[in-house]
Image (cartoon, rainbow, N blue to C red; front, side, top):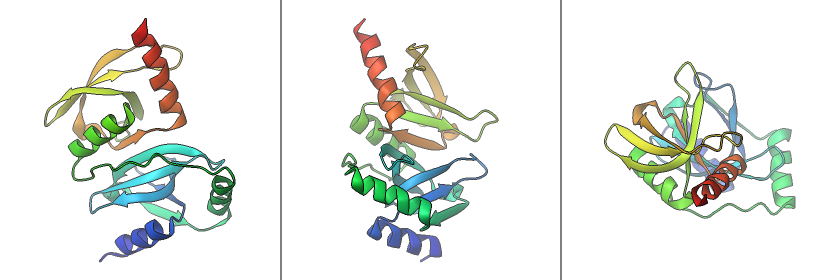
Length: 183
């Protein structure tokens, strides 16, 4: 068993809040506790700095460059989350493959946020998956709060480096898209 696997098991069991870094893809850390993981993927229940639920994030373990645990920042987030009685949507996301993750997240949350961080431009697309095959997916892309434009996007699966859902921003975009669909 690798050191990382050993620590992940420990952190998952204790629900230790951690910051995960993927320095070659993004300057941002992802903060949360480990909901699940396997040899290829990790699923975090994410927190805002104020200790509130910020949905889930899934990404490749091989992309992780460092993990930070303990310390005052994470302790403060945990204490704030306990004070606010922060709850997470109980969900079982199938971590078997990228395809099973995409399908699970889209079905559970009704929307998905796909990050393409490995490209020169770090972009995320929020929408709902309409179709796909081995290499590509078709996404009803919901646009931004200002554009509120639903358009179809065909995206290569290999470009997806991170999958999020259920966060405050994603939920807001999903809600606005549902209003747009009613027009």
